[in-house]
Amino acid sequence: MKQLYHHRSLHLLTACLLAALLAACGGGGSGDPVVTVSPQTTSLNLHGTAAAGLAIAGATVNAKCRNGTGTGKTGSDGTFDITMTAGSSLPCVLEVSNTIDSKTLHAISVNGGVINLTSLTEMLSTRLMRASMKTVFANPDFDAIAKAVTADNIKTAQADISKALSGMLDTSPLGDFYSTPLKAATVSNPTSGDAQDRLLDSIRASLYGSMYDTMLSMLAKTKTSADILVFGQPGCLYYGDSGLPQPCAGPGIWTTSPYIVAAPAAVMLPPNAKYGFTANINYPPNVDYFRQPVRWSVQEADAGSISINGEYTAPAKPGIYHVIAQREDYPALTSGSLVVIDAQKLDFVPTLGVENNTVRVMPGESVGLKVQTSYSPTALTIRQPVSWSVVESDGGSITQQGNYTAPARIGTYHVRVQRDDFPSLFTVLNILVNYPPD
Image (cartoon, rainbow, N blue to C red; front, side, top):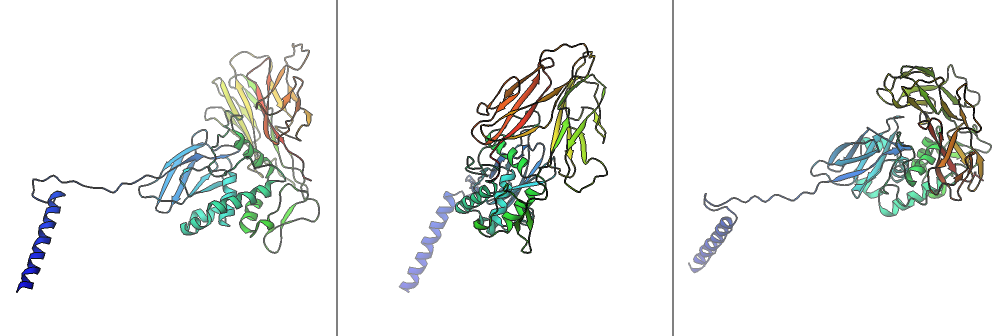
């Protein structure tokens, strides 16, 4: 009986304590305040810059994370900002499609915050996952991603990519391919990019044609760093029976890079005028084209129109516009012409042209740059009315006669040439400073 009384007393004491706790938390009478405690959540944010030689503007960036998704839109400078859905957690895979050539770029974020989308992040992600990033993004295995994307693996993968590119350019100044802040050049300001952006320019110019896809395939398929081939060395690459890129025994099939140069580089026209643009391109050997593989377009929505043959019709509204020529056989290659529509009466069409908008030169080497200009029939000139300048402070030097001397450091720099008599007409040349392959 005493034991029974002891158990009843214990139950009664427990019930009283429980009632007291409920009352303290608002669980007592109907007049007590109700306090709701919600779990604290932290939103996941991803932001960075998408660029491929120029900023990728107006494109949708899609992100897939372990427990959520998100989208963002790139601005005119390529920057984007994505706040993921509530409850999202890392890692995340990002994808953007280049609005110019429809090629996709990817990146993997394991830390959140800054994450860029460039050709280098595509290479790095491919090397880390040993697979096509299109396939990874379509059906991401986040456990496999978390296992592959570690600090040590990123360091090794970057070294592999730097080795592959060492025959053409130097990536060592860029310590982190994923999250180093990037300022990309834009179509309206092609010289505004930072050092990383100039490196992306060099990659685009060096990995021409199918070489970029070959690079990605090698990064996905080769097992060890010893298997990595160096691009830019003499010879060529082909796919052997193993399915891996192999160096050719002899010289490459095509030793000259494909190029396109829209001509003229700059032109001034009256409103509603017509003008014929041309494109200077080269062709691979033993290949015949039914027509020149060039697609013409006008960049701005209200900037006139252009035919398939390059015949441009100016708009009625004065302004500064851009005509774009793109190679159809090598869609990554484009060239632009500056179009100035001026309401003043002109007795001729002022133009400014260049032989090539990309010049390759060795460190410390000097080269003479040339432009072509048109003149009024009544004009008398002692010298060509143009002024030269180097955009970057460390980009070398140039005389007023166009004699350019490259800096000692390899990299991508820019030279601007402008008409003195028509200052709105100018163009910018890309200067690739590097040593030739051994």
